[in-house]
Amino acid sequence: MEFYALFFIIILAAISWRLYRALQSQYAPKQRPIPSKVYEWPDEGDEFDIVGESYYQKSIKILAGPNDEHVYNKEYRAFLIPENDNPYDKKAVRVDIEGMTVGYLSREDAPDFRESFREKKLTGKIKDCKAIVIGGRGPNGKIWSYGIRLSLNLFE
Image 1 (cartoon, rainbow, N blue to C red):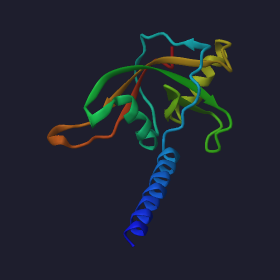
Image 2 (image 1 turned 60 degrees about the vertical axis):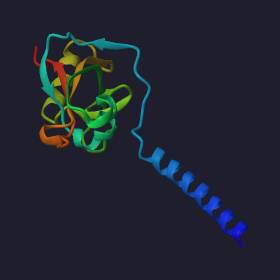
Image 3 (image 1 turned 180 degrees about the vertical axis):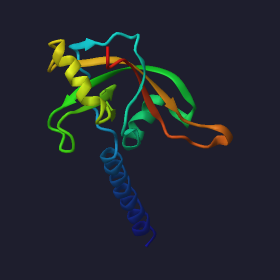
């Protein structure tokens, strides 16, 4: 009888482990290839906010680092990718860092961004700029959400 109980526990543990791994990979942030040919935006832009970061907290937390530490100066290169097939906004501009989506330019800023590149004959190219991750653990250990600030001047 003891043999069957041990056998049952082992089988249950194996099934639980496989289910855990399947669910963990299902909710992992989607990673895309990092673009190699891009137009590099000059780094002297102002701090520029993006939108939708609340939907990409898992990705941004990976960029921020372990332990929910407070960060304000973790630098990355952000890729600004026009998303013509976006079902919610045909003029959307997605922001990716390290192959993970972290947000979008706002509906008000995205058309201006696209227009400025159309004027410079850079339509269809992916652009990049400096980005910083902010947020994390706040006073008294409270966890704040993470955000992204771009070094970008859209209206040169």
